[in-house]
Length: 541
Image 1 (tube, rainbow, N blue to C red):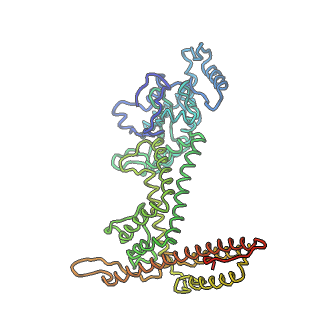
Image 2 (cartoon, one colour):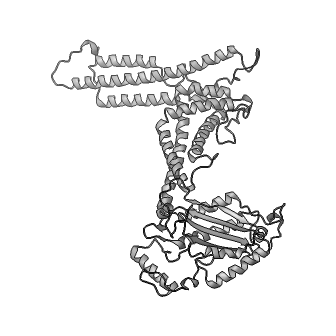
């Protein structure tokens, strides 16, 4: 932050800096006394005429004519006679209404300032710690939210002051072990807006007036009142201040973006679990995860109280399963959920840029929103899979060797062949109604075959749970033997092969039905030609 040599000449177009930041510091009464400083002297610094300017305080929600009228009327009311440029020309024009403000007033009077001096002296005499905060606000953010006109150099200072008035109580009451004040008027505070640097600065000073005697509010070593404010409360105040000043368009845009991110995450979780349950190609991956799960934790399998999957076996017994889980999730996001995940990541990149504009560049060790949300998606998918494994084994009665009910492809083919021979002997007398019923039946049969197939999770839960083979030392083994591993691998391959065979039969059945429908339609059209002898060639027989 640097001096500009003029007022309200703020730097524009800063992408990496935080839109609103709130640095804090404190001064103890003893340290101020040792340096010969008075708390009351801050009033002179705050009211420095090189830093403040009340004449450019304008409500920017008004139109241009209303702004001009307000600008003239307020300046005249405060300062009397105006010069040709609209500025007060009386030497004592600013003595009647000061740029300082507090909870009750947006501009303190001369009498208010005198009382403020007395209260600050009393607070210092009682040995209390003075807290100073300063909202540093970027010029382009002010302009974007209708608080600053960079061309006319006017600022909606009253709106800024109202926003600061709205957060001070939160700071007084929640940023220290106990509320700072012990009575209604026991906290002294004032603020001011400075315009002489490339960022607008809103200073805020507050201090307890009466002597601090509560043990919770006194530093154990020094015996002086506590000066460090709670970081979380400070960030909350910063966020509330910013939210109060943002215009509706900015709020809606950010809300829509973050809402879209959450909706995509929820949708991918639901769709992903359904794909994993229905797609035969994921059977082997799921079985591998299932076999890595610790058997004695059955019913309690989950990621745990962490923001990402733990893959270190020294830290979690779920680590071997989590390693396989990460591979499966990566595979799912790269295939069936590829385009949904790409859109999800694009929105997260936009959210990262937005957070950088609001809060500045990330500090070392801080995670970006994109990383946090991506980890949450993966954790929810993993917990969804573990939840499926945890559920009690459902009742399932196999209907035939194909694992589905109703009919067998061979029986269907034979029945259809007999029916077709009979129809041909009758001269292919199929009308449109019969054709429609045949196609409807085919669709219903296909649905039945699909719904009757057991899902991957159900099939895995009905298979025996074996401890995975791991070599520990020498010829000692924990869990099952190599022979049981081979049996397990064979069983997994059989399950996958049967599932693929089921899918192939279904497709073949639908293709047969579609071919028969086309033949029936063609022969029906031929049969409708009047006074014509129909001869069947070999391919119709």
